Image (cartoon, rainbow, N blue to C red; front, side):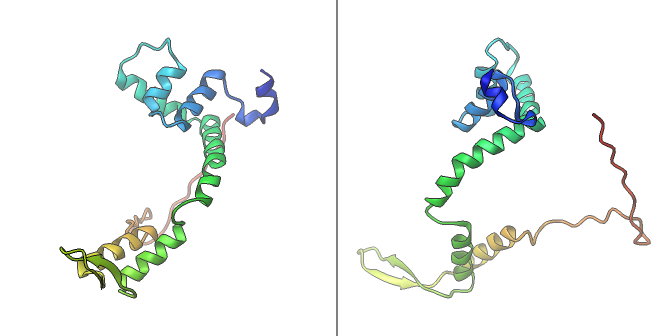
Length: 156
């Protein structure tokens, strides 16, 4: 109970919800985490999957998951083999054949080679996805180009 008082109101979870989040972060699937956090639940796998998904989509549960994930991931990201920027730079180098890569022949002799056309094309595809160049744009307005108005009400 003392643990609940130390967190903001939006982050207050039940013990079972907190356990669910902790289990997810330890590497359990949503189903496994739900079954362990709610041991009295005797539902089918399909129902448990639905309940686990719904639980994780709840605002305060999702917020707590992201808060803890960020605490865990931040130090790991600093030690990552490659940062996102480094990956994008390397993909760019491959896509435009800006450098050669080491390779070995059947006898074990080392030689340098530029990326193939297929490798360059794949690098361009991955870059395009990273920059969201291939997302579909959907015009939600009418044919004359007029938009529409949306009213959002917050209900508490």
